[in-house]
Image (tube, rainbow, N blue to C red; front, side):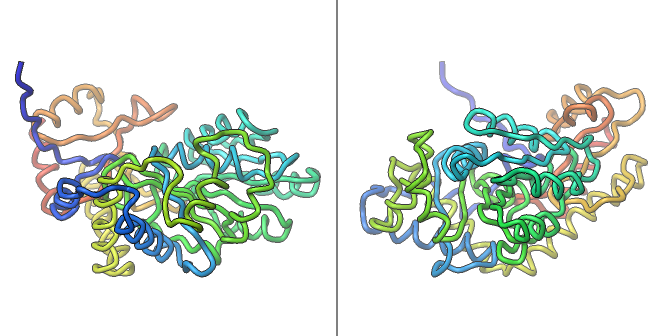
Length: 361
């Protein structure tokens, strides 16, 4: 039976996202061997562009490219970059912080500092633990996608810097949408992925860190072969390559997405995404579906209230029939909220069309 062409949905979800035409063309036209010098050059440019978004340079930092989702990058750090004998303190106030804890517990002694979903992180307890635990590493999520809120990486970074402990920041969904500066925030390792605010196809993830920090990992016990960052760093430094066969087409298309970001300019991009999120939220507020939260919110997505007497299944089905995709809320927010996002190849007219469809449900 012949496969039927799928409709092109407008993806108002925090990944996967709609990609620009140039990015799609780069994916289709990337006939390239990963062991050619041209691919090493491509990888070097991807590394440079990723580091520039993080506010650092190739002379001091590296960006390791992993074929896998953002979870693969997080697991790579937690499996291969935790100092021997250290306890990982994981700060969590939503699903993805708790996921970090679950990954860490596979490999390390782990202490979960849990706050309620959407509540402030318990930095008082973190400060106490940093004085009580002889050797530690801290892990946290920047944009907690389950709630839409931003966590205070600068404050946590100061505590970690003062205590002399490394900090892992999961910026999987915030990177290239909400400003992050690795040096200013005291971040040792930062993880992100291709299919969210970078506006590429899903399937690649990245670990950004200082060259000094990466070079020290060779002395650590090997707990995971495929995701061992010491191998990735060594092969990148010596050969300009990845240790395993990468998803070449994804790297080529991401290279184009990154060039688009830097052509637009980071400040203009941040402002554009801020305005798109504000446009979405104004529409929701007029319909009584959104109240601004007290805490800082990411521009990536908004948790919107479900209309009275409407289930998410009804909303989802009606919107999908009109070629729009939104996500259900998670955990304790499920059944009361749904998620809408404005990253990827999305414009204000797309948002207006979405609400015309929403009002017709």
